Length: 90
Image (tube, rainbow, N blue to C red):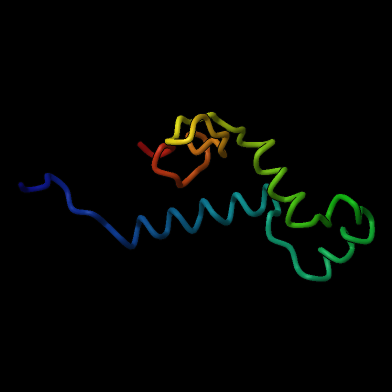
């Protein structure tokens, strides 16, 4: 099957790089360790959480679902909304 146009990898990578730079400038999602320590000092409870708290936050954010198993109903993490899972990408 022949393609009508060729894929320009260099242009594609250039566009992705530009998009990422713009997103970083807009959101500042990546910060230096020093910047994080400053944020940590200002809002320590908001920056620190245990593994159990992290998992609870995940379930609170993505939700749960009940599935039927061989031993009855089971509540699990809702994979239908978690990015990167089969149900979310299907």
